[in-house]
Image 1 (tube, rainbow, N blue to C red):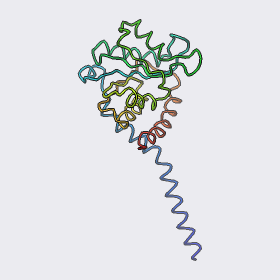
Image 2: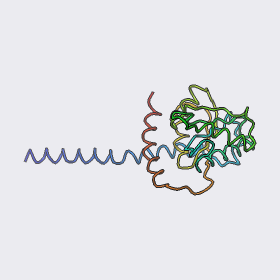
Image 3: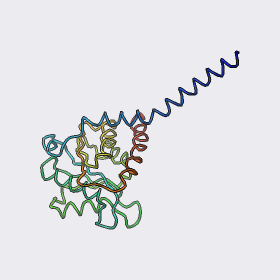
Image 4: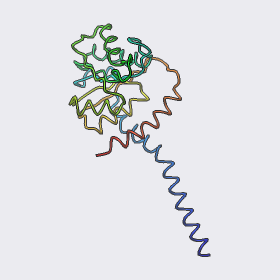
Length: 205
């Protein structure tokens, strides 16, 4: 009887631990989304926020000066916000040449200049190799105190959450969803996992 009772207790403990572990990823995603949601605004609201920078996050480029659809839409949204005086400066943050012949930030700059942005109004951070690194460098290297972050909606929650928890004093997000995108089940799954990773990174003191 004693062995059966002990086994029952162990089984219950294991079940509770399993349930907590299974629920934790969903809880973390909920926390990230809820925390960031109140800082996400519409494009037309961004002009009155007085931000220092419009921070456009990098994405894949197919060739020099050929952005992917996601990146093109991020740049277009950033240019639109700059034209609407949401901030005086655009910060393009992404992979600036980690691999030979691959340069997100120069592609972003050239595209924005071709759309009428003053070259002097654009700052490049070519060491934003991940969302976390982009936000970490914005706060701790570039000393940015306020920013409007531009990326697709599914990615925006994580970017805003990281920025807030790393200490950027005023941070807002504007979605750059200007069209439907391919492979969204893949992107959403990857983002679900990335939120868990960056939740822990953002809360390590």
